[in-house]
Length: 272
Image 1 (cartoon, one colour):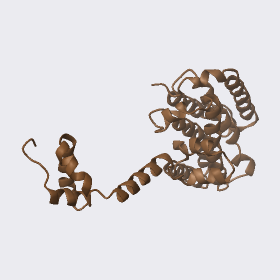
Image 2 (cartoon, rainbow, N blue to C red):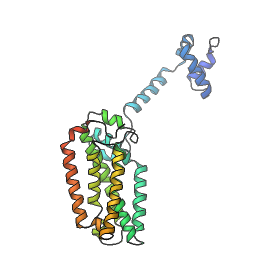
Image 3 (cartoon, rainbow, N blue to C red):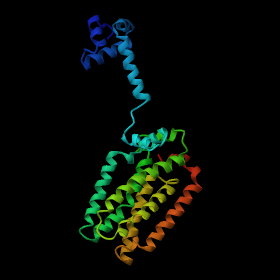
Image 4 (cartoon, rainbow, N blue to C red):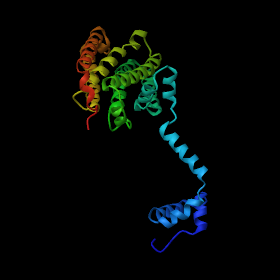
């Protein structure tokens, strides 16, 4: 490199974007260390084009185009800052929503075969919001985790907003899939209170433990409770009056714990 310099023809072609990527990389590496060649390049640069390129870069960096979720939130009169924080939630992305719909649809269609399919749906539907909430906050799964923590937003408020959005979207999907269930409408809605109980319990425990570990433990505990109730009292015992009352008590206790310890959520959710 010390004995090689750019000629005027190469500089002109480079300035007008008429060189290959390999030549451009070589030219740029040389320009970093060679002041005379940088001086040769200066008069060949189209300043108007350069300003236009930099203005475009600055516009894209400073004002990124909002995605579909963010645009819908803004149409719902949700403030821009809140819309952006919610739209960055991994559990509101198309990949998650498609997977969610596929799982719920499969479980709902399986219910047409026999009652075991209905039991599968009622067991699975309350766990999905828990998975969505865990995905929304864990630092290894959320690419905007640090941005959310650094935002001038109370951590507890962000926790509630994102959780409400995830649970709302998941519940709407589950409600739609439950219309495919065979049997009475009351049975099709039996998953709703367990979903609230499991999600609120996960959020309450995430103050002290890694939220993904909590979600796994809560989901496994719920599945074990359904299986135990089935052995003791019949196939849908976990979704009867006693089971619904237990879920209501868990929901109320978890929400009270969330409010009582709301200042503790200033620490990052999800652990290291």
